[in-house]
Amino acid sequence: MGGGLLERLADAIRSIPNIRGRVFLSGSILEGEIGPEGIEIWFTEMLDWATVRQAAVKMVPEAKGKFTEPLTCATEPNTTYLEVTPGTQGYEPTEPQGGAPDIAALMAGSGAGTGSGAPPEMGMEEAMSLGA
Image 1 (cartoon, one colour):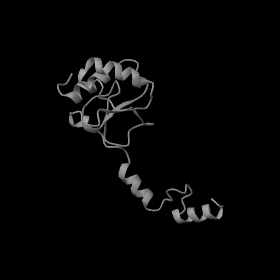
Image 2 (cartoon, rainbow, N blue to C red):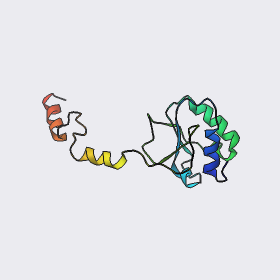
Image 3 (cartoon, helix red, strand yellow):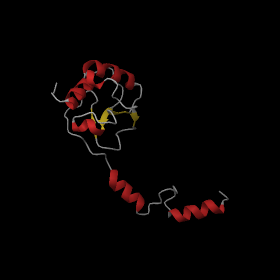
Image 4 (cartoon, one colour):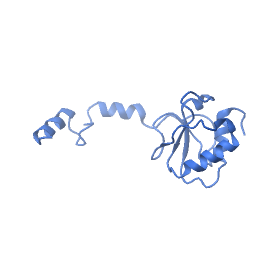
């Protein structure tokens, strides 16, 4: 196992058997310290939360009571993260896929908020004409 807190926590989580989904860390722990927000942890399968919490604090005692409420994601978090799913390696954080470009595309007139691809103001007119 690595020597720093991030490395030890990542290695501990990666060594836990029977994980069903993917597991990620985010927030200040990526800098190697537990910040005031605690240890942010993400799951694609919430059933993994109890398993990870119980096993990780046995292997890394300073993590006890430091995890935030678990966060969920379908595939990957929408923030910078380190994947710690068993079978993964390394300690370099990953930027979220499509963060700013997707937001910029939405803001450039893809019809965000209307679901139709029409300009947002058209969606409002339609809604008003329907009596909503």
